[in-house]
Length: 222
Image (cartoon, rainbow, N blue to C red; front, side):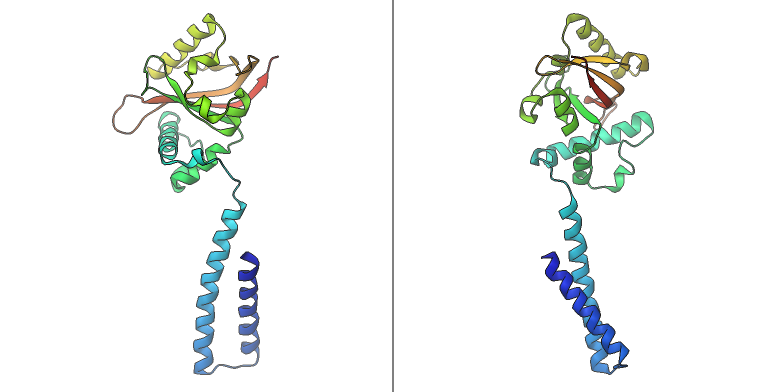
C-alpha cells in the first residue's frame, strides 16, 4: 500500500515538474496540475498517516480499552495535579488512546490500585508492560490482585499501609519510598528505587479514587 502510494506521488511530481520545465501552462494544463496537486496532498496524507501507524509498536488490546484509557487519563491528570509536572510531556496534547499506548510502553514501571472494590484493601487495576515484567505477572491475574500481595511479611504490610494512608492524607514522607522491598509472583524479592506515589482523582470531588506509582528502577535481590 505504501509503496504503491509512494509510486503515485513520484509519478505526479515527475509529470508536473516535466510539464513546467517545458513551459506548458494552458488553462487545461493548469487545471490538471491543480487537480494533480490536490490528489498529491490526499495521497501524501494517507502515506504519512499509514507510516505513523506502521511505526507504532504493538500493545495488547487491554491497554487501549475504553475503561483503561479513561483511567489512565485520570492517573496522568492527577500526577500533574499532585506534582505540578507531566508524567508524559504535554500529555494533554495526546488523545486518550495515545496516552494509554505511551504509558503501556513506558520504560519505567507504572501501576495503580483503586478504592472502588474495597477502600480498605485496594486492588490493582493497572500495570504497564515494564511493571508486569518486573513483578512476574500477566495482566489478567494482576488486575484482580489485592495490592497487599506485593509484600512478603507483616512488617512490610504495616509499613505499606502507613505509606498509603499518609499519601492519601497528603502527608507523604519521601524517605518512606526510598528502597522499598517488594516480592514477585515467584517469591523472589526486588527493590524499588526512584519511587513516586500519588493519589488518583476522578475530577468530581477531592476524595481520591485510587493511587498510582511510578518506579524508575527495579532491581533483583535474590
